[in-house]
Image (tube, rainbow over all chains, first blue to last red):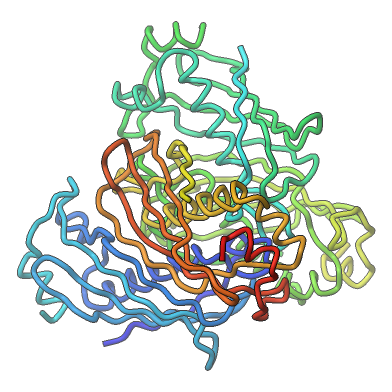
Length: 129
Length: 129
Length: 129
Length: 129
């Protein structure tokens, strides 16, 4: 399953190079996994209410081409791996046929206190684990 | 009393105009009042631990001249007003003799739950009220 | 004429108070005026290509109620004033019937070099001036 | 050679988890390499003036422990690799003896137009290549 979300680049996301700052892409990855979780049946707000957090453990991102203000982009998000203690999301950022960035993030399952916990059965089912 | 803090403009704070994005200044005002509170005797972290928050109620900011990446700037912060229910901070952002921005923010005294509360005596004394 | 844009609050826009950071609202105002200009006939990217920039001169914003992660919000944007040298935009941020913030920003007409210029006739017509 | 820069966590850098948002670390890596370049003899502003940009090609970052508002942190930056066409920076973010994050970024040498170019001799000497 892949979630595909369209969005426009905001001016605040650009930098003095005239292109999007590389850190802005992380906000889009977050947007992508938020929408993927919603499509899988429970918004991340509901995950948090249930005391289940997907804390970011690793970010790996490769930039292929620049993005510009007002570009209409797409973020494509999938679950690459999902277990009792961690979930790995994969991403592609595209502008029409052009691939702008590709990457993955590794998340640890934690409670609201930041401590590791096991992913509850009901959320594992949502992720198809 | 005025707090004066020097800092350098970060690349991420710029935008495609080649100058600092106007929203980045708000992070600097926040930096200014954080340091002013520390100088007055209790860091804002300690305020929050005591259940006292200064929630932003209004922002008023005038931009006089642009700031650029790597500029060495100064944020000058004072308390313009301070009462039982609200505190007003005043700011000037400068680069050497040049005034880049001037403004003020109005803060409501709230608890950690966001509800209005009265500023405790000990914090009023810190602010010289 | 009023532009109305819906958007969801991103996690990155929140802060340790558990609510949206006040500076995140500025990104939404920018989003609002970008979409208003598009609806008026020329995207802001086209304005910039024509060498016409609306540089932020003043920000005035009042916060009425907090916004939270994943809230579905609306930004309502109008032109309050428009002349040869400056344009004033008005904004309301709402969540269903609740007003979260209200404000305005004053923009100076400048060239790509940041220097003041007169708003060209064709853009004045777009703004209905 | 290692550059070591101290800085305080800003409130705006936190998120609703009560800790620093993972994207905020990228601003700190940028801060680290900016200061390393300055210590090596030419500020990045001077690099850009000479038409030499270090465009971010890849980001790899592992988070070990959370950072909190007002924490006094240190960013330690080194050059892991440096050639005619790319430069690799390595980073550690620490709070006293605790390691909060470790990672590296890969940069492509480009001109102001974003196109690949060869790193000029004078800058290669600065990097000790």
